[in-house]
Length: 231
Length: 143
Length: 122
Figure 1: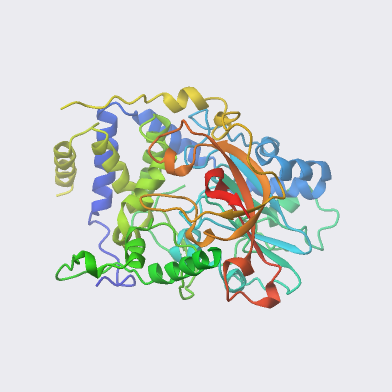
Figure 2: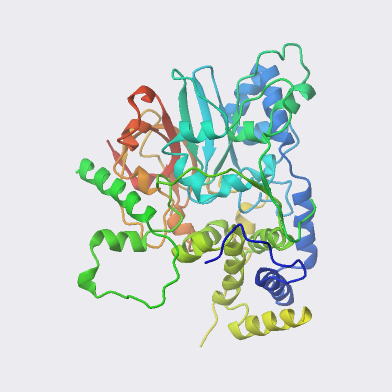
């Protein structure tokens, strides 16, 4: 049986995955199903993605109650104000196929904490949040979060008080979600840019809370790629 | 009625949680009398439907992306852009049609990749012979 | 032997400049349920495909939002897009989903989306 912790194969060994990937891409291009330019255009689009627009959406909502209302009511419309067009920004002009075009912004309150999972695959709002982290895609997170949310959150370092309602959002169809956490204490008078910095990817998934001075996700082990893709 | 359904659902989740990829030295295709309705439902369940299954806690990890993983994701999106499949068709093929063993046994993007290869064959854009020859040709570039 | 002919521009023509699920807006007719209604998830077969999670079957929930109109996943997974339905965002009580869920956290909930044909009045 393969041991996932055994030494990685030599880097100069070509994997079956690499070979098949090249074969599929080249065949699709040879058959005229798409062009190399299409492929490049999508890669260029991927390079524009990050969690920053979602963080800015939250920061704007903290500063502007009217915008917060809009964000909760119509996440796609609210995204426009942070530079994200869910329909027309992509090479398709009809949104990304995998992410569809329906964003909901789930606003926490002092008595309500949201956290997002996709139990069926790993649906994720890429256009406004970038690529999903590995742990979010694991069967483990997907199996357990819906049934033991407080235990899983505690593994991420979040202890939710007994009097707060934990609401798991299972992103199972065409809607994509981000969490709008409560604005933390100690940020009075901050600018939108300052606030944006503390809304990390993990805060937007719901497994972390924003805190003054904390501008990165909690450190976790990083599984190295054999031939890493440089974003 | 509803109570019976709830009981069956929870029992089902316990059951499918026990299914794991395995390497067998012989096959055991059972005769019909050896398959209960619970087992039928477990074997035919969509392999992606895992919410609520029991599991132990693990270390949460980040991961660097392989070049082939990035290219695979892009290929799948561009195939949808150009109308070869829609996203639901892709999700069905890569998360359910692959079956339980591949679902849990292969990397996340490994399933995307195999599915992208198969859609070309299933929809007759390429023959399987063409695909096989292409894989062979690409392999030889690295010998 | 014949090869099928696919209209590769089917979705492009329908969704360009509009988006998906927006491109199905107005095709589902009147919704059967409204916000606040109590519904129960049917225990339909799930052989071959579904996106209605097993853990929701037979459970009661409350409609919190009519989110969009779309073909159900079971249809769209084979590119059948004729029968468009309302999609509902439903709120479940965790205590209803999981018998062992702690009484101390009886306020905890779960929200997810289920298409109309999976629902019946509670």
